[in-house]
Length: 490
Ligand SMILES: Cc1cc2nc3c(=O)[nH]c(=O)nc-3n(C[C@H](O)[C@H](O)[C@H](O)COP(=O)(O)OP(=O)(O)OC[C@H]3O[C@@H](n4cnc5c(N)ncnc54)[C@H](O)[C@@H]3O)c2cc1C
Image 1 (cartoon, rainbow, N blue to C red):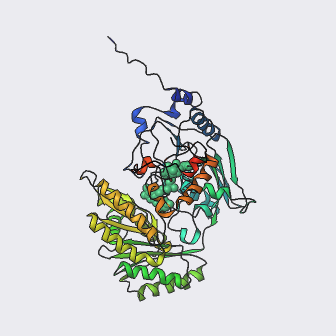
Image 2: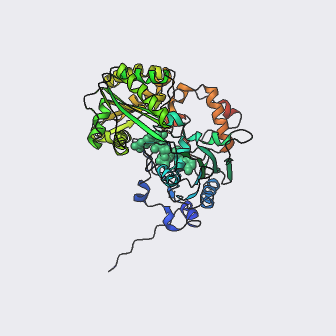
Image 3: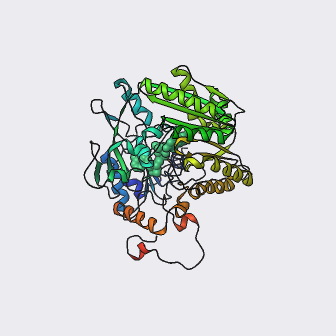
């Protein structure tokens, strides 16, 4: 006797997608959907109703039109490496993955530009440009897997953004599918465009204004030489002072990265980069540019390290040795998994002059919460990445989230910002009122409404909502934008 399983009727939403995409591009089985339940902020998980994998801009637009017709929210997704819950699905909503749009459309060496589909990885751009003596400057540590679409949405940075700037400084033009399914081009192939900078507005909007389907980026010439130093310091303060001294000497290194002992312990265990395990802090300082300039500034930098009591100065002798030093730094987030079962990567900015103070306060807050915090960060621009270590199995998740939020808000208190490069996402939406007034947020929401009046594109991210932040007791008062009919309460 043969048993037959009764055929499950696909939902009307799935049927709509199956009418415009082949079956392998529509994921709706429970196991397949689980793959998309979170991004790098794994404490938040939501299973979407369906995941679609369009292969062209036209298919992305068709998928968005299905969502618009049904009033269903959608979330764009690149590689899912985001650390602020930006690609967290919406329950009953659609995830639109850009993983199948992976073509490098053009490397225009003469004009130093590359035209890319959004699913191209950050590193693949530099690899494709390398034969022309060119490279793509923003270099998030996740560059082997994260996509240029995700970089655009987050305005991602990286170690070398101190000298070269963030994604926003390197993107010339973006093609965007707006939340009603129409396709627009923002920016242009040249460096400056007439009129308001809508390209700039889109970059860093975390998927809330639409889906980017094509990106034109600027490529840079590979520098003539690179010099790197790894220096250990007797204290975080001494390392911090050195960073200030370098900047005061009018030197702009390509990168200035700091790690504390806990971060080095993890990175060393994973990569054997040659870090000193009992050093309280270390700096990686890298210069690039013309040989003569680099040599002169390199001598100044090593002298400044010595003046601040550096206990070891290691100068990698070859490109391979330099790569090992960087491998440790770039692997540091993942390596923390070796010393803790779970961790949250926080991202905040403080004025460089307050680095030592913020690190002391973070250590105190960690001790109070009974949790360890490792620090690895872009010291040159005051962009911290405290890693809050915890064990979910031991019931520490809630405490870790609280501590992580307190650290982000401390950055604002010290005159900095809630995020340097990882975005606000789900993680810090509730902290936005710490940094922005109600009027500021109202204006931001109004801008968003101009692109997405129905709030279908990545809802619940960036902007605080009572649902996410916990209902506050007391009588409900309508928001001024709600009274004006610009937004509605769902
Ligand atoms: C180990 C590790 C190291 C990291 N290091 C850095 C670092 O040095 N610097 C840094 O800035 N970040 C870093 N990150 C964070 C992360 O890699 C970046 O934010 C990256 O840009 C996310 O790209 P993604 O393709 O994974 O995007 P996802 O995580 O898939 O999405 C991120 C956001 O972008 C939106 N999005 C994705 N694609 C599109 C699109 N085509 N159109 C519109 N919106 C879109 C999503 O909706 C979401 O809001 C790191 C992450 C990890 C795990």
